[in-house]
Length: 251
Image (cartoon, rainbow, N blue to C red; front, side, top):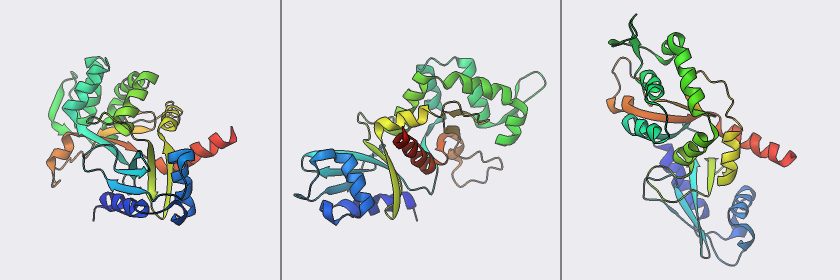
């Protein structure tokens, strides 16, 4: 079963055709924050799944207002993926020097280097083996991309807008209909930027790690294309949202 797709349909069913007063207490808080003061009990909500492959998974409509929502069910920490060649072009547009981009590419494929620093295409390393040998190069890459303008751009690409949409999501939801948390678009920037000093050994931008979808060292994967996909993962996304909102309330 694809838990992500099922989760999307569950949320559509949770809201579609429901009046505000029919919602559970958590959903009332969510809808109130999503639509603000216009929400009342005069009309039912409408909801439907986005048929396009975009960051918005579902739409929720109240009266003439439509909001877009991205859903993460917590079964997987992956929030974005794209072909490595496309990712390289994206880094170039961000004016990351070629030599630094190659430090990530080398990690992505995991090839070992010989004593002269040349790539040995016959030897592939796990992520831990690679970091043990070449952590200093990964540190250079991380230092180069963990700058405010780049983090903000990557938040847009990886979470809020994506590569194939002109529209932003309004809110990110994490969890299932039985237990979920959410965060508004503009708070996402503050949350991720607050974590830009994390000392990860893996390639990362703030709290999001960057790496191959599958390294597939033994070439046993049913989908060998996965090793050419860059996968962005956000571990502890639900916990990060909860802690950020708690901290915001105290301030």
